[in-house]
Amino acid sequence: MLKKIFNIIVYIFAIIGLFLTAGFFAVKYGATDTTGIIDSQQANFIEGAGVVTEPGTSTGPYYWSTLPNIERQSRNIQSFGHGRCLP
Image (cartoon, rainbow, N blue to C red; front, top):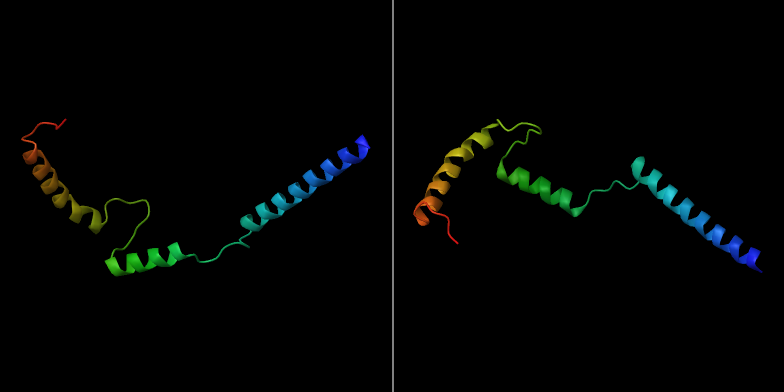
């Protein structure tokens, strides 16, 4: 009886292992690659913004055009607190 219960537990773990292994290989070889909602939203956002993304660079035209805005905003924040940190 104890041996039968042990065999059932071993078979259950073997089935779980096969299921997880099949899932791993499905992800590894792209069987689960589908276009999700976030992919289409990101594409629409980038297309609508007119921004060209260049991975790994921070010297593109978009980066440099935001620097004056950041400086102006930081001056506004400093003048709001009269140069001191608020509690």
